[in-house]
Every structure is written in C-alpha cells, then in structure tokens.
Length: 175
Image 1 (spheres, rainbow, N blue to C red):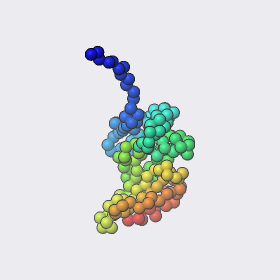
Image 2 (cartoon, one colour):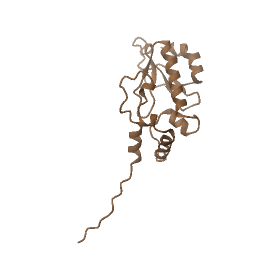
Image 3 (cartoon, rainbow, N blue to C red):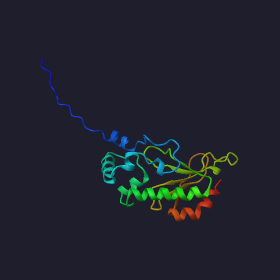
Image 4 (cartoon, helix red, strand yellow):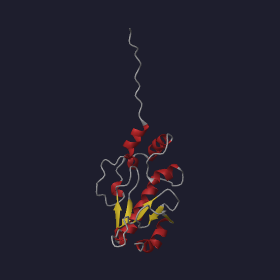
C-alpha cells in the first residue's frame, strides 16, 4: 500500500492575525491617557493596511475593534488620527476637571474610557460610576453612562466635545 502525499498548504488564520493586530502587548498596565495605551499594531501600522486587514476579517463576522476603526471603515470618520484627537481632547477636558480617571483596560480591541470616581459611592449604593466612553454609535462620538447599580441604563449620546464640556457638571452631579 502506497501512502498518498497531499501537499500541505499553510494559510494565515484571519482571526489569529486580527488578535495579534489588536494585542496591546507592550501597554503599560497603568496607562494614564489614551496616548499611552496606543501600543497595538492597529495604532502604528499604515492606516491602509489596518483597514484592509479589518475589512477582510470583518467579512467573516463581527470582530473586536476600536470605535474609531469602525467609524473610519464605515466612512463616517476621516482618519485614525481624527479618532486619536477626539480621545486626547476628551482626556484633556476631563483631566482638568478633577475626579475623572482614565481606565485603559477596555475589552479586547476597544479604546479605554473615563470614570468619575466620586460617583462610585457606597452611600448612594452606586456600584458603577459615571462613565464617559467613545463610540461609533452616533457622530458625536461620545457616550455617557450614568452611575448605576445593576443592569446599565441606556447610554446618553453627547454632541461632541462641546456637548461634553457643556454637560460635564450635570454628569458629575449624577451620584
């Protein structure tokens, strides 16, 4: 009996390639700003390469990705650098106000978010503080999740940085 030889072809696995692309291997565990937490391949590779890989992998189904990449791929945000600028401006605004802390450890592929620590208060019983996050859900790019206990309420869509600046005191009062 003669063994049949079948040529072995090795092809990249799209999911594995994407997991490697979003991995924050060198991220400082205590990144204090969005800029400090941009350590993955998707943050530094040529934007056209990032978009090509994202679109190829996404054709198999939903994949974890930062809000700005989803928005750029959909043609709603001009570039990755515009997304970075939005994150950096939110960070600058909230850092000046006090009580806000940047949280870099978001789910795989996502950007970090900001928590208003005074709203995480055991007296009021809130288990989750008021949270500001970036989103591709609407073109204001900012959502606020009020302090809450139990299932999260619907996020409040904010009309960009100007809307966040105008409403920050109101959001901080949600305790």
